[in-house]
Length: 449
Image 1 (cartoon, rainbow, N blue to C red):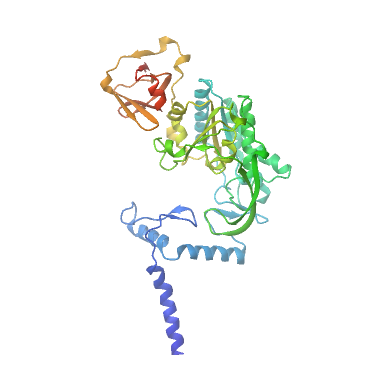
Image 2: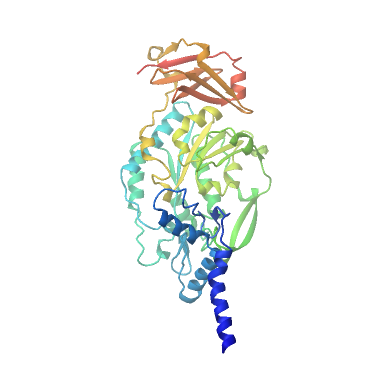
């Protein structure tokens, strides 16, 4: 009896002490619930006691194993999904946690529609085709699989499209694409795996809907063919960023030939939001796309995770993670001078946390100076000592330092470029070749307020 008590006591204290012995001070992001773990509680804002409690909860030893065991136990015993990123629907379907709630239509959506119009006008003012692409959340395609008691109200989507229609914005709603695909017996979303995005088949047909819409504006657009991909199937043992077991067979379409990748060279010099630094630049040398246009795409995870399909369709494909970055649209347009522009969003990302409302309200992009009467602008006389030139390996930043404030400022190199207001003047970033071809001679033009 005494030995039993001793063993029980040892086990009891081991349960208490071992998690403290293996306290985790190194991990920055949890792989099991895909979030940043609490940092040093004494260096963070807010209540110190609350910060300490959160720090211990996040860093306690064996945390991930305990969460996994608890999650699996709830699934096996109660058929209950206990995970911040996912939720069970009916018949074993899994949906993203938090994206099945209602999103009331409001000022944000009107401001967002205004921004899309500003971007479209900017492109069309420069004879560049533009398309806005809206990709649906999984519940929009499988509404009958949503668990009882969850309010999934999509009324705001129709009201948002009404705003796009009022502004004559060119757009594709891939909700219709995915619904039609399902009618044909093709599942554009997996039953379980990656509940927040479409699968490879959905991405293939969703991208083709985008390409077909673009082909109405540019006849050289290449429409993807399934024969250009290797059709495979993969077994996914766990949900993404989770160790929740599923063992689901999912479709996989692999490109037969990969394009050249210039991502790292440009990304080092580009100005990108710190929270959303995604960027890619691909050059496709296949004969079937040699006459296709050079495209610039602002995109989210529906395309970031399924790049095989859009990059296969263009001669040059440049993409920027859209959140917050797209508000600074002329910066990227001036660098890359695209021949086609696409702006893609997922249904559940139309939120201020991704697209800042106040910054969208401030948008006032330069008009195309070539379409303006000469009486509307003037040549600016400036001192060369007010010009600074910062040359990188690929990009050159030109800044005009001034305390004066103008409505718009342009710089003429081999072509006209829009200069943007910064704290101490106006600046523009261009590819090195564009600056070199100007023989370092340039002019500034302004429109006064």
